[in-house]
Length: 493
Image (cartoon, rainbow, N blue to C red; front, side, top):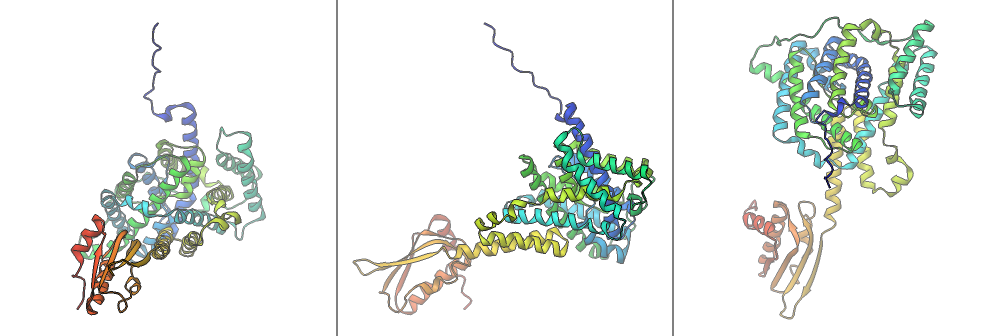
């Protein structure tokens, strides 16, 4: 009997499948449309011409499609980077901005190669939840200016757009609902002759392709002293937002991404962007969520988002200009609703969740919304989580004592000993009332730092001052090595 032939495996990329290809193309188109007003708005925040933000979005998206480590994630000009560089642009101009973007990219490449992405393991889940919720709030509040001092028809258009995106997926998912909403609302605006705020009102669209530039700044230490702090800020903020966004997409898609490659890929993309006169950027959580929610999972959608963006603003600028802002506002409102972790704020969840976890989540949200900077929120959230963890672990150390038949008193210490938990260790012993021989048994403890060794030194010194002997016993290998290396060498007297 002939054995069945093994299944034929195709070596074609996944995106060559007609169904996947259609999804990737349509998702890229929706993202490109959503990128236009965002890039223009961020250009205004940074104090540069809209072309600078639009070209940055194009070069970032196309570059990261090849260089990045997280497929389907969108990188472009961002508000966080715009806020960092705005003072530099006001004081020194566009050429210093370009030099800053290039230097920031170099810093990101160096940090990526040094393994900064591994630090993501130290970000707790509660910080991630706070990051997501704060992001949803920022995406929503960013739409509010487009809803102020506008005709009532704008509100009707926004409601109609939201209704399309809510109900259309129940009928079909062949075409992304956001794209349908944009096309239908634009067609309605044109056919009805409605005069509404549109994309063209946000700023002049470019009419030529980006070209290579070299920043007209002197290559001196003075220039480095000016752009250095801004470049470091752009690098850190960009990496943090990009890696957090990559982790979020990992969770949504149940896939793993190459964080180290993403880190240096972001740097390389910023270097390329700088040499094309762009304002720099990083991963965009809003556009990434649009892309992922539309079903995109490969690098093709990221590449096409950048390519479509360039085609739309350069070749079809007049058509793009008539898209009503109400349509794009509706898309972003739905993105914010879909991004927010509603489960995290349900009363049942809050009752079960430890108060410390809720405090970390709320601190991340409050700081992010207050500063409009996701990096600040994440940093504060991690610090609050670390402090609460240290406080909680500090109370897990226990000291018990017993006297044996020979009159030797043994103190048994249980738990992890570090700066917080060992702070009160010196007060756990009866120096005056104890016998002449005392044993401190650490077989159920672990010595983590120099603070603990200093505390143990203080214990033995206090017993010695009373003419008594205290022995430290039971140390595991790592604790013994640390204790032997530091004991007796930490006193300031």
